[in-house]
Image (cartoon, rainbow, N blue to C red; front, side, top):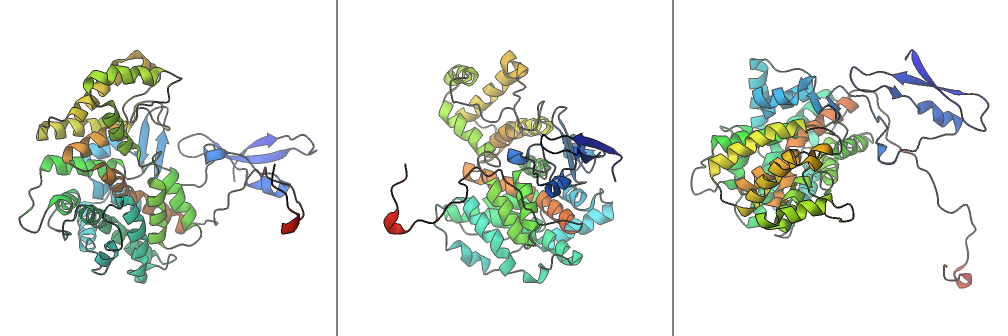
Length: 432
């Protein structure tokens, strides 16, 4: 029980209401408003921006200082010294693995990369021009029809099997979504490759010749997965938790997270970066669009700059910038859009307007550049985000299910009609 409290005085209520205050290991104190319901009161917090919906030990963000910690480890250190699957282990189990634990974990993931052959027939039900995220929403949710031997959410072993299956099969399904859209044959996983190499193999390989995967591109893709692995209680993670609170199976919960991620204000941000670069069109027009971005009366926005959470430099962007530079140097691409992106980056890091408002390039800006340079279409950007974020969704879902939780039931501020009587059809008049 908390030894701190806040006292709330409300007009019309004689007795003050005491609210317990809890302190986490990091971050601001939290008021427990759960007792207000018994007093006939709710809080009003659109978007839940001031509400802690759960207790968690997985990820901590300090947006003001530009800090992102996974289980206490700074994201910069994980990106430099770790890899995606090791970070998956950390998020799931709370500690970095030993060499033996990591080898066992990676080996188990490799054993689950294949998907049931009948899943291939699902793809024939989609139009060829279906958005890959639409396909992913449907196919991932359908996994529960194929792997119903791991749906008992109260069984820790079942939850662990489901976690391995989702982490392992998401790259396979993502690559299948891409191959289907361009009319090429699906590529089976190659478990002799690393997680990122395998994904690139399934994306760009073909059955007629062996895959030739650049180590630089594989490292960059692994970093994209790692840097998107988790980001605390964002919209999609909160959606997974809310769906999970009803007792829904893990595949349904992750499908719900994919649907939430699809929104342009969430996972579609790096896709919006490329659309913005296309709108600018030429380096000669950059100054024009920068001035428009500074004009409060102009609806145009520079996508990929600033962040809702980070009021400083996005710590993930620093690492992603290094990867972007490495990929562009490796590929030596002469692409007008990439030239626009590099020039915008220079302006944002030197222009007083951007510096004063802390509109630094964020992770979406650099990941969009990398994926574009690799030849990945914009429709696949959010799918790749979903592949990386899957482990974060699973970690939060498992944390909730393995602890004490209640079904989510947000309240509302009702502003509709008061009670009124039904009017027979022949007596109704047009509204207004």
